Length: 440
Ligand code: GLY
Ligand code: MN
Ligand code: MN
Image (cartoon, rainbow, N blue to C red):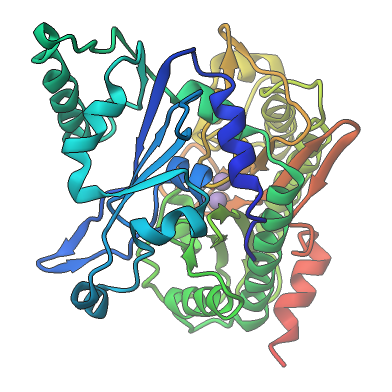
């Protein structure tokens, strides 16, 4: 599921309209990374670079020069090379790039040191995200220093460096309808994977067997990879927030927490469900599960344009803390517990994060020191949880080692929110029914 090619020029135009006059923006492709010895991780393009180009090759450099007479969109990319392409894959190449990618000019990236200083020269300001890649920062300084070395010949080096991310990431924070469509599809694939895991689970299986079914479902539907390493934690492992070993046996009586979402055409989904391995919640598991579910409903109710970033979290915390007091896991009043923060023993993370091309997507959470207002088209997760440490002897033993999280992806709308991940059941009855159903 690809975005319409018209999205990219629209984005570049929107970005350039916000850059200062007589400026230049330089955005490199992601570096590749070694996994071990001569094996590399699968290459994944940088989200900012892809957002503006739709181009997934390594070693590219995107240059935007608003107002440049000979074209505002310049791309440096790998040259065609029959032998290299036989080993590592097809390349667009500079000759075809204008036609294929819509750039005004394209040059071999091997010539960048000769060409880019000439494009920078005479511009007042360079926009770049410094501090991300020391190698790129060093090359950029090299290009600028080359111009500086020529001032006696009349060269004009740029006077200012400016970060690009605050402008670009505000754009990425608000999703277009086309982006929401891709995210909806990603969410549907992930929903199917979660449903299959619930249907498949049986005591005696290993966590990695559910992980395998999740990944298989993603890939069979056209996703190349998960948006982040899948978490499949049974029993006490559900209390480890970023558990990814996924190598233990699932026992009768365990809850299984799965936090997994596919990436589809560079957009992430992020779903968590928690379900009983034997198809039936124990009374304690059910009590805590119902509490997390009520907290999630309360948080989702707070997602709408005009509310603030902290409102869903505050609503979830209120429900969780009141419920923990009722169940005897916390003592004292709601106010005293909110004040002391003692509940953080059981709920130590926030109720969500922005979601988009990156699973923890870009965009500020606070503006002028205050939680920012939610706006139409923002996408976020709503993911309250409760985790009772296995060794927490301040609570009755029957509660220990229970970990629960319920996570959905939602789009902010004027009158509420759209739940992209609504296809995965989450009530106790629905979850038990699916776990008892088995795969066809
Ligand atoms: N899967 C990472 C998160 O839920 O934030
Ligand atoms: Mn998650
Ligand atoms: Mn999440």
